[in-house]
Length: 603
Image 1 (cartoon, helix red, strand yellow):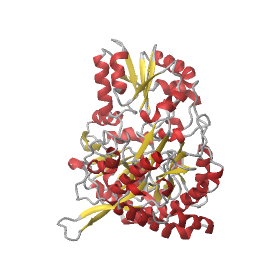
Image 2: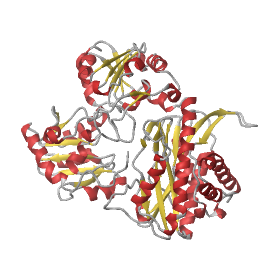
Image 3: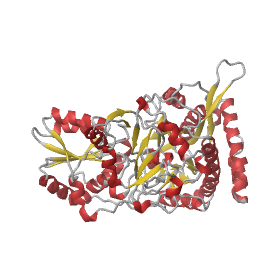
Image 4: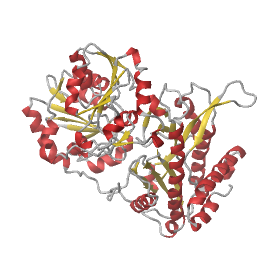
């Protein structure tokens, strides 16, 4: 689980691997190849065997794409990775393009030649994304052609790592809170459009539905598998036999038929004449094509597990509370270290990351990190989702800020927390900007809202104080978080971008406004919070939902300009710190407890 800091790729990957890919393309009569970041399961984080984009280009970010043509190539990333891509990719070979503004379709329109045949692997593209790409290629007079095998896989050859075969183990009821059979009956009986079955390809849905966890995907306890859920709650689970632990068949029960991935094509053929739900955002075009060829009626609808999985039951919510109390103690020990040794001998980013992970490991309950820790000192903190490497590592200096965004995976919950800490004496500007971010964070934590409210409706609350000063940030304010699953979970989110999913009790989201001054420093304050059931407000007419904050760790009071806070905000911050001290204080050593009492003192 130890985080590594030397990249697994380097700038020579493109010059060494692209010629091999082009040779394999030519052997299949292709003039180009699309290389998405996504794998066969549309994962955000990938096992090494499926990280085709990294092998082709050297780029290791969690979002991106590439197009390799006979005489040119381009790699596409979003703004989070503007620095990283130029550090990892040979810019003499690859043109660097924006993934969001125009992206691959715009590139195909101008770069693809008339009559060219550009290959794509139908297992790696969602049908909707593929339709946009096909239309763009057609406008250029080119043709997208499905290919088997993938020329990149052929070029990778024997050097390609083996597919992961981590054991799949039961996730006990004391953590899951509901039997798999009950979930299957509930979800199967409510399939969209009166469908007979649903094809599930998202690892998180499979882990949740069958109450199992695996280890095929880095930073997430997920098994790579597929499943067919029938309307009556019975299911077929397609799992590599090497992953099947001795107690798994009995755990799944006789209503679940264990099969191998090689059995999947024939199983899809068995759905002839049936109505089958498939999620176009979660499943690749290959499934739609296979079902259509089999004579099934495809119902394009959201993965039926997505929304129920997001609404945590009482056991999962209580598990999240316990996980955050444990994690808060580890994080408080780290913040104490930063406030003592870290002030007299400021650490570099890698030292800070390693120290924090060691405190989490010392709990004895850590299963993994929930993502690679983001530690940005001074100007690196202004790079959203920056991740330290040996080449980019920077030491914190007096008068600077250190931003630490980290999380952990425990059996009872997944955490994600960001704290920004002053090293030495912060400037007046730092304190002002930090307090504006804090005001937005507090506003989003205390809001009450009626049923039907979406994260889009709430997003402005986190930005209003910044907007009043002509400031803003360019990332979302909150993402969903799983229960010992992925740290990024839909369908709920809080962001400017429109989202039609209403917030419901049990949903866990992050609350993470920020501010970033390019070349100087970054600020982000992040807690996780769970949506609470509707309650009546005295004198009110409608019950209102709200949030319960889960994360428990002090916020650096040295960065708070108290005169910018209202009396309500000061009382809210003091109440939060009182709770942190009450829950975390008894777990830590006397010297940490003494520091925590000071760190949590009223503002």
